Image (cartoon, rainbow, N blue to C red; front, top):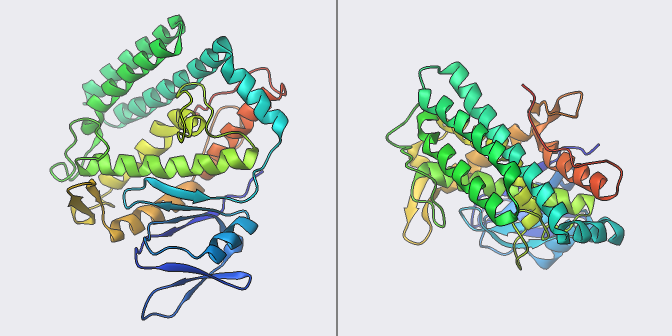
Length: 341
């Protein structure tokens, strides 16, 4: 079983990361250096534009710590990892499976059905606590109808079309689940690149964090993160990670964003507007988000196929292991991720 290690988020854009022998430190002009205990860290994600030294990145690679440099709104700039894990046989099986249209489509249907079921469960749980919200329950019924339609899809393009309808319907009622700070966190649908309001900024940021988790998980198991079944194959696009994310967007990321807003953890003053980047979190906002995300990873969740509850931080590894077992013929099918009631 994997240990849930912390992710170190470097939110201050003026910090530089250095190597000091077998140790690491973070330096900021005019302040004493901060020593970094690498034994407790699984990943380092830096928002700093001050470059990490080559020695620091080499130290991360030697210790199996992925180092990612990202933009202020979470978009990956570059990533440094050590030796690739796994073996050629597993990746060959992955390529053969995803190159076969029937197998690839069956797996994609399995993943998207899981996404729709987990989204439907989020809506049902919200309706249980707020039965006056009839829009939510109506959308849940529509999602269930569309889920049945997916079985008739004869190719990936038709499946993507139905998934897009499901996503638009879900986000059409997302604003009704925002219970506080409704003026500051007004939401009129999903937009990105750049996000044009605070809610979309939070959703994009959460999805970026989730993507980093899946990149670490697929690398640890030995799968190729750039070859998937639903998102296709395109240079520079981590398609398999995006496939996995579909199952957990509502279960983990969307639920997390709703919690941040509805509990008043995120405030309007933690956002700023940039002409190129749209609405984004400020440095204090990114720091608060990162702290809450690390707490989230340690919270436990029940999923089908696992007897006991597990930390949320292990979910990406569970998914990667399940796909690996299927590709190795150690399991008759890929077991999709579904939360327990």
